[in-house]
Image 1 (tube, helix red, strand yellow):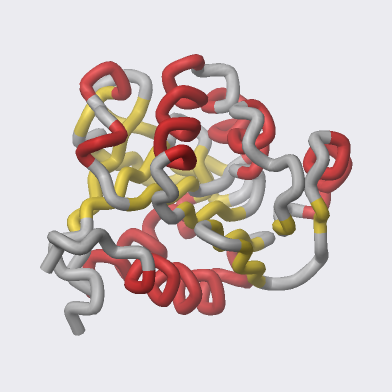
Image 2 (image 1 turned 90 degrees about the vertical axis):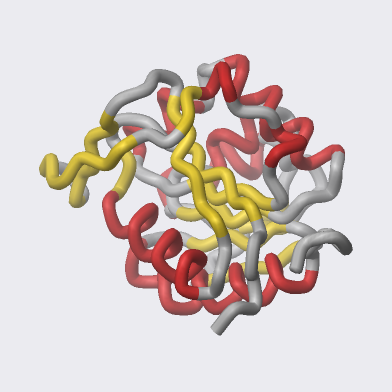
Length: 185
């Protein structure tokens, strides 16, 4: 399967990301032919969690300082409360997401990661879902929050939690394929 052949996907994450919310969608993207890069505030390794417990570490492909939105066709934001809370406070993350949104590039966002969209000022008027504990933050930022396993709104696909990953991956692949740039084959 190569629906996303050569599509360049930025995976923004840091310590505290929910393991399956990064590894499973990344695997689905890679299997569909995309080229994924994990981008974090610092080079080296980042620590995954399985809910409250530390699990694996993964290698960072590029430090945030070296990542340019123009180099990517889409973005994946995995959840994990610690990850999303740390990433939403990074000015460079906000700038990266604002540039990707301004260019109309597709986003796949799960669990607590909509916090990053809230902090970047991007959710007003959008319909999305997230982990239920941050629904007030999403609503207070002007979005329409719904409790569904997956929501597609324009160039965004959002999901609530690891149990939703099969639907999330399916809709992410479909969205990314429909929004692929003309020159990417």
